[in-house]
Amino acid sequence: MNIFVAKLSFDTQSEDLREAFEAFGEVSSAKVIDDKFTGKSRGFGFVEMDNDDEAMEAIRELNDSELDGRTIVVKKAEPRGDRGDRGGNRGGGHRGGGNRGGGYGRNDRW
Image 1 (tube, rainbow, N blue to C red):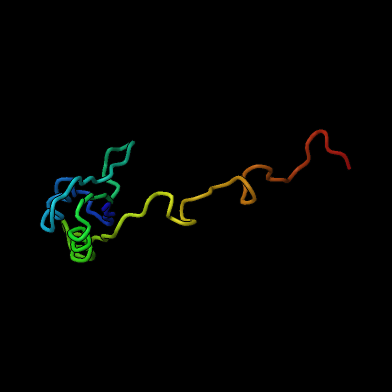
Image 2 (cartoon, rainbow, N blue to C red; image 1 turned 45 degrees about the horizontal axis):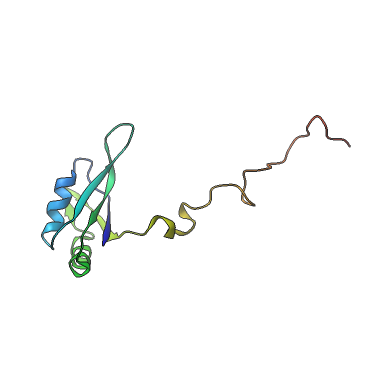
């Protein structure tokens, strides 16, 4: 199961995340996401655990707990395509983009 972890301290490293989740079972991977330009933490990460029961227990126990001085949010990660309107279609079609109207071109006639 892929687990999303938010509100991390900017000092929290991937190994810190791994250690917190290993208390509940085997961790396949743990990654704090860094900004691609600055290299600094973006304050969230992902943990992968193969055993769903262990993963669910980790989510229950670690959500709203403290890690490196911050109260973290822990939940099952949503696949990128299943986030609803929060990050989906940004323009085109009937929602903008394309022909934005306004003004008249050289060839428009009254």
